[in-house]
Image 1 (cartoon, helix red, strand yellow):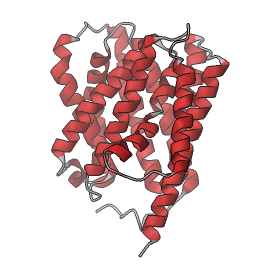
Image 2 (tube, helix red, strand yellow):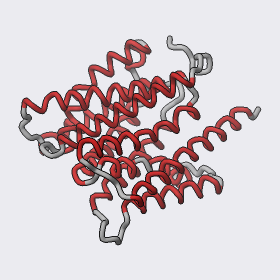
Image 3 (cartoon, rainbow, N blue to C red):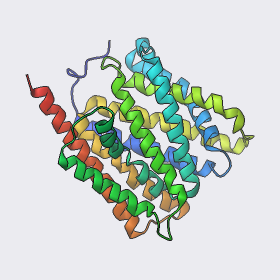
Image 4 (cartoon, one colour):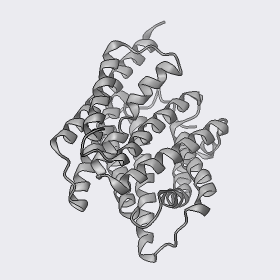
Length: 299
């Protein structure tokens, strides 16, 4: 049996290294996907990503946690999460077709803001005024990037915004999964759900694949699988409050890759929006971690 989280040794430095590398791998996957959206619909990219990634991630999960980690008692919840995930990822890839990589990524990173709002209306949780202020600041950052009503507004900016809302909803559904089910199992079933629902949709979206593009589909699957694996390991070897803020390094990687490959340079307002989204997200993560520690400390 895998060692219980409470007894597993903590190594913050290694955890930070894992999440930084994992987020870079996921951003590379997004960059390859952005390039492929010029020739293929998002659903097809998602289908092939899941098809290639599933046997890889099954092998990783089995190696790290044993065959028992391949089983779950929460299949209906995983299927619901799979449906939400495929919709969110399709919106994100559609946004990549029209928006700079950094701006599309930044708006999608508003997902934790939606989690905070949804937790109040769905779970009836109490959110203190500090986190409400952080949420408002984060949404101000979204407005600075999207700029509704301005001449620079692009309707395509609604796609990553929908991605953020859907990912927020998917994070909420994770709370219905019992604590006995490990993060590796949950990660595996995200890929399973993605494959199940993309299979149902692929007949309406399939385009003939060019042989020269196969390495890029393989790169998307490998990078996304490596990224998820490294991020999972980061949370296994270090406290969540330490590694979670480094998830926002994805905004930096997206800006660099967008500049290198598409000559995309966001303007100053977009950079300010990115900083507000990242800052509010980090603040919410740290404050929630502090509140969780206080709850556990109570007799």
